Image 1 (cartoon, rainbow, N blue to C red):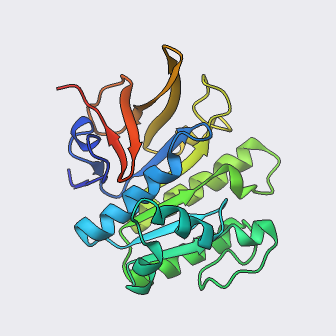
Image 2 (image 1 turned 90 degrees about the vertical axis):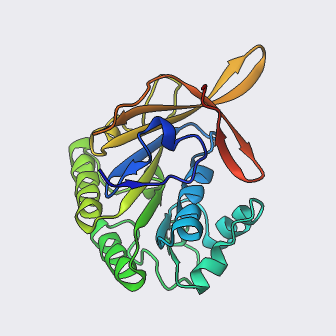
Length: 238
């Protein structure tokens, strides 16, 4: 099996050498658990370490805000856009009803068809290998039935598999016992990684758990991690 190096120190050794190439992974967790950093680290490592161009779809933050935040970790997203190694699709500005000057944006809100077209266009332009959708809940799809929502997610997930992109999609867990926001996201992806903040001796500790990874023999235990000035580092017991 061909693998894609995650860029997260310690993660690849517990998932058999990396993400299965061309698969889609759901990154779950509550607010402040590190989902956006995890995804940016995946994209940036792909560009800098493996010459794999990436697409980043931001549905919550304006592109300029995202770029500024990642500079604190030494990740210059704007420079990678100029180099033609990264395309950020702005799906936040239309949702917030504010002006945006990005070449790639979800012009019709969160219509799945328009997003699919933008992904196709971006992927063709830079020969993308990796993609991030951050996040699913912020898409606020105008769908009232969960069955319709599941079909829309399945369609998007199937497209990413068809193109061959290795993709991460984030969702929010509202309660510690929940995997995902809607309870269906984990069923349309081939892998599920849960990031959590757990209380230990009056302190909050960060943990990562691989809940599902098709085709991979992996541990189900919580792995401690930290967010450093270089990004996320897992501490895997030897």
